[in-house]
Length: 305
Picture 1: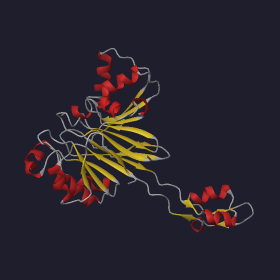
Picture 2: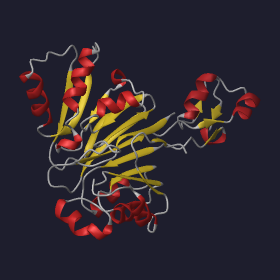
Picture 3: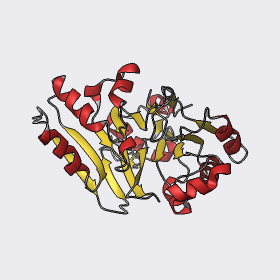
Picture 4: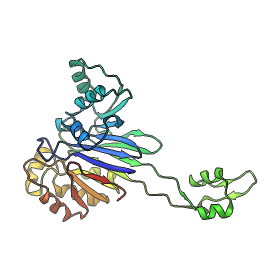
C-alpha cells in the first residue's frame, strides 16, 4: 500500500482485553512511522506482523502514560534484536529526559543512536520533511502539552500523455522537465509547453492524528481537507460533563470537527473503559458526519480507498 494506517491500540488509560492503549503504525511511501506508544505496543506490533526494525520515526503526542509507557520497552527490544541504525523520536518537552533516565537507571547501553526532537509548548511547525512526505505538528487543548501530527504526501509530478510523447518523439530529458511543470526549449530551439503534454497528477493523501483534546475549533485550519482524520472520542454526548472536566472529546465533538474541517473520513478512538462497545459513539457521530468509524485494534486503513 502507498499510504496506510494500522490501529495498534484504540483504548484510553485503562487497557481492556479488546483495546490496548493508543498507538498507530503509519506506512507512507515506504516511510515507517509509529504514532504514540502505549503499554503493550510491541506485542501489538508482533501480533500484526510489523517489523520493529523498520520503524524510522516515532511521534509522541503527550506524556500521559497511556501514550508513551511502551516506548522504553520497545527501544530495549530494538537493541536486543540487534538494531544498529538510528531512530528519530519526536515529542513534547521532557520526553528525552524521561526515556534516557529509564534506560540509564537500567544500565542500558544501546547499539544505535536516538535523535530526540523536543517540541516547545504550542509548537506549530514542520518536524520532518524529505522528498516525498512532510510531517507537521500543532497544539491540542488538553491538560498538559499535547501535539497533533499531520503526515502528508508531497505533490506528485504531473502525468505525461504517452500518446503525445510518442507522436511528437519528445526526448526523455524534456519529458522529465515537463512532468515538473516546466516549459522547455530544447537544444534545437524547439519549444515544449508542459500543459500541452501532461495530465493532472495522482492526488496526494494526508493523515491527521489528533489525540487527547477537548473540543477546539482552533485546529480546523490545520486539518482542513485531510484524507483521514483520527480524532479522539473518549465519551458519548450524555457524558459531556465528564469530557469537559477531563479535557477530552465526545463522538459528537469529533464528528463536528470532521464536518467543519471538510475531511474525507473520520476514525475515532481512545474509548473509555466504561463503554462495552462503540455502537453509541458511531451512531452519534454519523448523525453529524456520515463517513465516521470507530477504531478497533488491528484495523488496517488504506487511504487510497
